[in-house]
Image (cartoon, rainbow, N blue to C red; front, side, top):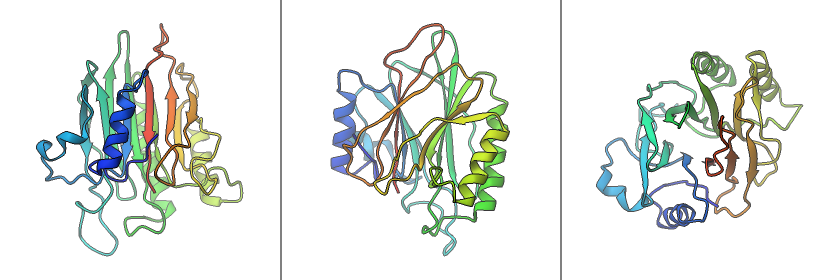
Length: 246
């Protein structure tokens, strides 16, 4: 599997294409750290998009603590959606402490919104204090709570939710619990054995996510696969592939 860290990197693009040609290709890729710029044209990265998929890109817009630069330096999140999926318009989001984009898919009998989050690690010049993130993430949760259909929050949060001694992680998990949300990833998603990459749904959701991962990745994060139970039928090929980067 794959960790993006530049969608335009020839090797990474090749691995995405190989996955798209697999016997059970994902219906949706949720990507972080795409390194795509706001001024990039479709022609510039057309070769990076697998045949039969459409790209929905959101370049980095949060500001660095050390400069006024908001684009063109790493970051960026995106979705690759397999045709002939119907994608509805989704609002944009602007937060200081994390990147976020969403996409809403029209399914045969329902709708599904996926929120894709990338929170830069503490070492990044784009990071913000935990308190700022928790405040802003609460705002995003309020937005998600008003979604009139099923939704998922996923992405690279760079929070050690596996460490009960980490006060930031405990505050984050308490926030999820207090808003009736469930975090489903219960295994390490990083080579240093921490769980940083998450899949979150409402505790009342009928999606019943089945989570798995692959160790075949060129980066220090492992890709996460999520198989969803879309009522009233099980869509065996609806795989949400979250590709994360440090």
